[in-house]
Length: 436
Image (cartoon, rainbow, N blue to C red; front, side, top):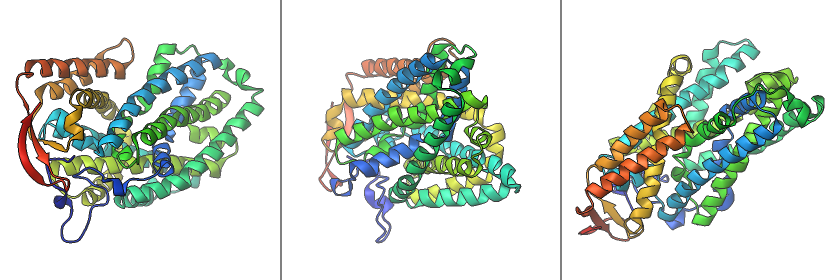
């Protein structure tokens, strides 16, 4: 299982790529349940999710909140669990999976979309930490931007092992401090029912859409991390825990504190509770873990397009994201939201293609077809529907349209065999085959 570029492209001299940007992760490099689990939890422990939770807490009563996070969390968990399974089963990241579904050059479309989106969110995340922290400490925001951006870029540069270390430290800190904030708000507010008693009447379907939309775009990159899992069962379990239980915990932290204080930003919620230093710690740890994953994903996407090693591209993306952080925060969120509408269709097409052509992924076959037009059209059409359609849940609307376009494309080309190359056990060319 490999991309169109052999692994040696990422191994100049004796420098071995431990992140397998151009090939499947071998079984000898796989990691256990806890290592992958903490990386996935670090990804979903995100301050933006707590802010969404605060909006839910201000807009819903307690039963409405429970229904919203349960239904929305279940949708997120199912979507990412399928991607987690494929990543662990094949050892391929999202970009190499896209070679099968979109074609070797068609894969540039999802790689560019997710690479730019995650680099943009990295910059926004740096600003999300820098602006309130600088305000609290009385510093110039650029000081915090440069320092935070440098640390986050460095840990992403060193790859999955560094991300594991940051996650192992940050996840427990976030869980403990967030739980304390939530319990304090519940106690001071006279219980959960009383805290949620100020509902503004947010429609349940809108709330479910907010839950799904909070992480469905980032969840598309799930295979980039679960490809390191030792088993598909472990990958699915860690992903469901992260995207259902972990994300629900983030919503709950934000919702209880937000409903109690009337604020929609977890940083200011904790400040209002007299937790200034813990607020900085939670905000920094939250954003660091998620920004690690975002920049790592961005590097993999750009590596697929340029065939340049991932690490230098992580540095480039990190520097660009850091230098433009404040501008991105002020000007780019709307554009990022549009790009986010195009990411769920990518994941939906990857899932559909895997289950239609499972043997190609599992029999060491490398695609050589340049472009799958149906898949590319599916991403464009799905993204437009997700952005412009007003009814239902945007991400689901986008995924349905994308899969329909993909299947129509498959039907039109069903008599044409997919062009594949059989790979040897060492991921080198062995013999060419044409198969369906």
